[in-house]
Image (cartoon, protein in one colour):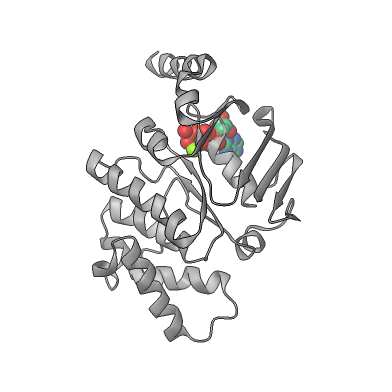
Length: 246
Ligand SMILES: Nc1ncnc2c1ncn2[C@@H]1O[C@H](COP(=O)(O)OP(=O)(O)OP(=O)(O)O)[C@@H](O)[C@H]1O
Ligand SMILES: [Mg+2]
C-alpha cells in the first residue's frame, strides 16, 4: 500500500531552485534511501514533506490525505516523525524529559504523565540510552545526542520516519549498529523509513530502494545495486567531489 506520494514538488529560495518537480512514492514497510551531493535538496525535501517549510508548488499525499500546506505539528500528529540534520535537544532537560516532551507534543490523548514517562524509557531502551535517562541532554556525547534525536522522533509514534544524516561522524562499528537498529524500527515497530546518508555502505545496507537527487531534481531510482552502477549517479557524485576539492 502506498503511504506517501509526492507529486511534482518544487521549492525555490529566491532565485535558487532547491527542488525541481520531484515526484516519488513510498510504500508501507519500505526503507527508502535518499542520496545526492551536498546541496542537492535532500533536507529541503524532508522540510517540505514534514511541513517545516511550505513547497512552492506540488502536492503531498500521506495516508490517502492531501497534507500539502499543513503545519508541521499537524503532519506530525498524522503519523510522520523526523530527525533534523543538526540535532537540537532541550539541553536543560534530562534525556527522558526530552522524550516525554516529544510524546506530549503529538499525543493529546495520553492518560498521564506517568504513562508518558514509562513510554519514554521504553523508547530510550530501544536506542540504547536507558542508562542516560536521567542525565541532562547537555551531558550526552554527540553520538548519544543523535540517538536522542531518533528517540524523540520515535516518541511521536510515527508510521513514517524521516532520518536526516544521523549516522554522520559515527565509526564503522557504530554505523553497523545504527543500520541494524533502523531495520528493527521497520521490522519490529512497523515503521516505514526514508533515510538520508552520505555513507554509501550504510545506505546500501539499509535500503530496499534508493532515490538520487542532484541539483534539486530526481536523477535516478532503483535497487541499491542498480543505483550505484548508474552512470548519472556516478557523474553526479564525481562532480560533487571535484567541486569540493576545488
Ligand atoms: N532556508 C533556506 N534558505 C535559503 N536557501 C536554502 C535554505 N535551505 C536550503 N537552502 C539551499 O537549498 C539547496 C539545497 O539545500 P539542502 O540543505 O536541501 O541540501 P542537502 O541535499 O540536504 O545537502 P547536505 O548533503 O549538505 O545536507 C542549497 O543550495 C541550500 O543552500
Ligand atoms: Mg541536508
